[in-house]
Image (cartoon, rainbow, N blue to C red; front, side):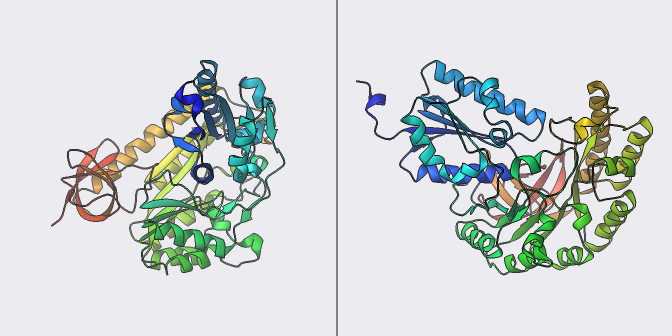
Length: 449
């Protein structure tokens, strides 16, 4: 009998896809699997069971997920893998229909069943039946403590809520992840302390709508109360605010950020569009005037603030004139970082039913034009940083001694980095640098003695 068949503990390979919120789910599942006597492997070709934690927000995410699932199923057909389990947002969104698109899946695990993943794996191992584990609309508030981090130990995501109750007409998140649910403050702080005790010096605050934190619990200025508590954690150096809905960014919050020694001067606020007609069709509560006034307020109040946003190109009824208005706004706002996506008519959303849907060619051409405009702005702004001095958090050091780090204006995983020659400090430590130039979107730097 082969060594493989004599094993008493099964090996599990894990594929983690999607946004930071999904990464947190992956980290929690990895911890649950690892503490249940399974052997985790980073080589899925050597795994008995493969778990794919999927994203299903928009079409490209679905395509990526199906490609990963198909790869795992092919390994199963070749006898290298015994079982394939699919979890996450695409499982929640498609349910049993996912079996039709990716034949060979042994089990579909929806979001409410996240914390039962180890039990589900054992159930799947002992059965030849194809199963779907719970497809009800998510309503649980998960405790994310005790995760096995995919990120380096010196920074981590801190999820403060689940789901979303906004009715943006293009968005599938409420139907996938359920209504907005703030995690209790005590739960969030306990997780923050755990992450910091384990070495994190930077926490990225994440949610579908971070600026809405606490309202469903009756907490006034919930995000500010959370910030005030996080700032008391001695070893925590950087607090980074992600996913701030523009309409909820109050003057009070702006002032708190400006005054804080730990909240970095970095604002991530997806505006999606600027034309009032399109914003109304998107079911957004922002207006052009309010958004422009907010940007002016942020730049006036917060020293050297770095602004990040996302926009959608080619929404239904976006005429050439309306697109030019969006383009002019991007030129005016001069965001430090901008992501632009073509509009996808996602099934089940209100926007997918709108008339005057634009062609893929038009949407892609507009996306490219916006990104080329933003590229010019980003390169110009990076050039202005030459000679500036920053404290950089080191993420990695290569064999040549070049450090990969980030100053406060660079969020992990999604933004550019600083490439630091002859970096004297190890991963997870801060080093003072002077920016010497640029390399594509990245900055080059030298250390200061």
